[in-house]
Amino acid sequence: MQSQDKYRIALLSAYALALHGFESLLPTPIPWLRLGLANIITLTTLILYGIRAALMVTLIRVVLASLFTGTFLGPAFILSLGGGVISTLSMGIVVSLVPRLFGPVGLSLIGALFHNSAQLFLAYVIFIQRIEAILFISPVIIFLGTLTGSVNGIVSDMLIKNLKKADEKIQN
Amino acid sequence: MNLKGLLNSTTIADRILLFILILLSLSGIIFIKEVLPKGHIVWIEVNGHPVYLLPIEKDRIVLVNGSEGNTIVEIKNHKVRITESPCDNKLCIQQGWIEKGSIVCLPNRVVVIVGTPEDELNKRVDAITG
Image: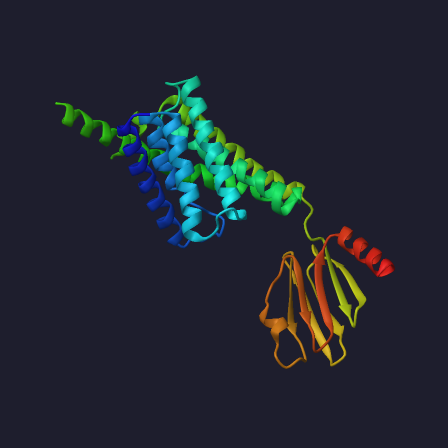
């Protein structure tokens, strides 16, 4: 890993961490509705710098955020870690298998779907253990995830285009 | 960014995926609501003894004779509430309409529970064992 990559990862992790923290301050109408703003950074990192960088950014973000909020190794941390890693991996695998099929919006949707599925599965295994409760809430969560996921995808798309434009300007 | 630019920046696969996800999750919400058992029975107890066992589907008003007086329970549109109670704090009335769970009026010793027939069965087992 080059030192330039390290700087990039550090910067992107800081952005992701800031968004993560900002998001936890926002009141939401439904308690388990999360906007997943940090996924914007994860997705941008994935598309611009590859799966390893994206995974690094996710891990740094999840661990540091939990340290700051005091939930490190607690139940919220396990959910956050599982969701983050699975969604990053799923997006990364889709990008490397079929690079041109999905744009940022589609990738964001895949990430949101896997994030929510992983969290529901973990919640079932660790906390709730009542399959009716999970089944009842799954479609609602996946629907909300689809909405927030598409918005995040659009934002990532804009971010990626602007970053590429800025890159071209620098090179010219 | 306008709508056209937005559409151009998504691939066909993106749009298909979005469509499928919305369709699946919405039909999932409807399907699960139909399949899962709802609270079918309104169960009213006085002093720990069941006095009424009513279907929630049928709208009606019930007079329950508690230890301090009459509590009036109303069932309407698959919801239950207590409209009148002789107790002082009227917490049971303030609780309003419920679709599931229970309303407890401690002073008058009236308990209204909305549950499935299975809940009722489990309760009996508990009563036997415990």
